[in-house]
Image (cartoon, rainbow, N blue to C red; front, side):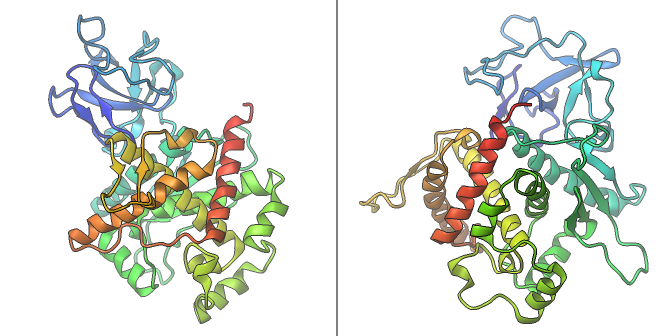
Length: 379
């Protein structure tokens, strides 16, 4: 995730900010332009704060936004509106006022939200929405297709955020089916999620990780199955036609096979070819987002004792636009070593508790190549 800047006072803004902490103006994210803007009300709409005032209305640095124009805030004569979920303190994205849409590019994919009159549901849903916006930010930056419900696409991306029914014996399961990603509200409860992570022997379990994994299943449908890449997929990940229920039962009965670390990014990835893909996809998104964050902070990895350069990396590029996966991987490996060492210094477990053997690197390369192809595809 990149850093942003208030165009009025120069204060650093973070992706989740709703106000500038220096000048106090409301701020919102405009996804079409990849910009965080300070805004002020004007009638029924919001306009860019300080626009037209000498010395204001433009970013104070010369970095280019996603449109390629440094400091260009575009044609905003009609003003902007906040997403309808802004009023529920669950979104800080905006959209042009003239579009007539109630929801932003992230929230328009929501199909079901929980009963928000329940304070616990509301608080957990807010956490889920924050993770979802980070997911959608990455998907937009990567140029991946994001068909919306109602646009005529046979499999639009849809989100259901569901709470367990009171007294019900069956609990909501997080998963994906036919374009619908379901996230259980219990995953937004830190204590419950950590208990599930421990009980299931997982090295990593987060809300954002769930989103990245489940949307991986969606993009398997879009990029692999419908994209004509089944043969290449099967050569790397295995047989996707294997009975899924039988594979699931076998995995939970017997666990991962011996030596799984040589070919899979996680134990769960061994369960079925679909899960191997989804786990690999999630790790690709982990990699891209974390590298962008490192670059935004100007980080570099160059330990003095690293004479052969194995732990050195310059993190000064946009990972969303890299054409060769080798550059991503070359920066990612040293960065994870540094991040894990920092966590250990604080008495925490490794931030990235995974090993990427050569077979997994090839799978990541396959994911990357499909993402690059999707970004270059017309329309």
